[in-house]
Amino acid sequence: MNQQERAAGVAEAQTARAELYDTLSLLTDRLNYAQRIDDAVDRTKVRFSRLREEKPVEAMAIVAGAAVAVGAVVWAVAAGLTRKR
Image 1: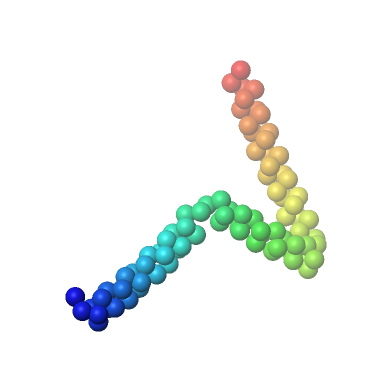
Image 2: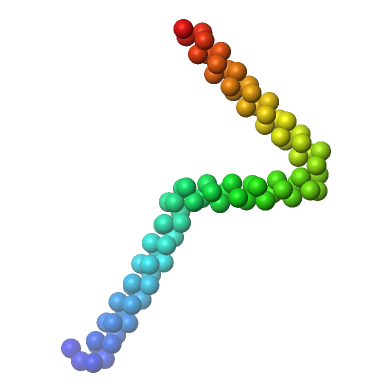
């Protein structure tokens, strides 16, 4: 093997290694569900904060609706548990 072939092989290996690292990085980002959830929560907080500043009545309506929904779920679970006993 001459010097040119060796250099070409090294360059090819470096390219393959870089592609592998890029692929692993993408997979890590896509499969890291905890980080994706944290990022989504952060984005939602920012969006809601903007909404609260720009349209406070709508923001209060969303909060009230969410409270009603959570209350209904809790009530349904509690009612279901008391019926089973």
